[in-house]
Image: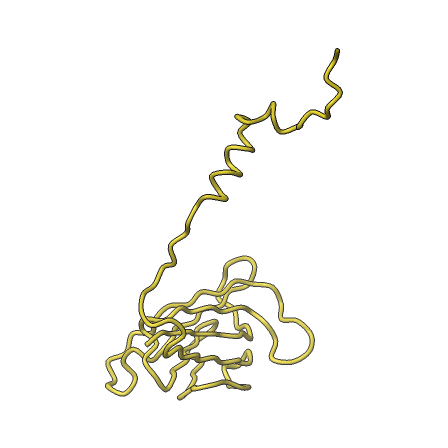
Amino acid sequence: MADLKPKDPSADNQNAPTDIAARKLAQAVVAPVVTGDEHCCIAQYWAVLETNGSLVRGHNVWRVAHLATGIYEVIFTGDVSAGAFVATIGRPGIFTEPTGEICVALRYSTTVPEIGRGVWVQTFNSAGAPSDRAFHLLVTTAG
């Protein structure tokens, strides 16, 4: 007599790549990357600048400057030299800023109170030429 018991569809696929990968994934243990005390001492600095370099709003901002076409510096109240810098072109209020590109770097300074506290920001139009653009800048540091 024929076996009328329903067949397990996964029985034929024990070695199928997706089944092997799924089993390995289920068994995997991911070790967290810990670089210090978790959730301790996170500092955030941020600034929203108008096209002309004026500060519209911000948090822990010491001063800002518009140095030349498409070149800005933002000096914060604390050391940001080991932080992560994120910037995006965007208006401080409603509407949108013309398209373009933005670059950030730690600002080199020899003035004692500003060492390690500044971010250099450059903005460009879509063709890559220096151009003034409003932007939002966020810096997050640990420690």
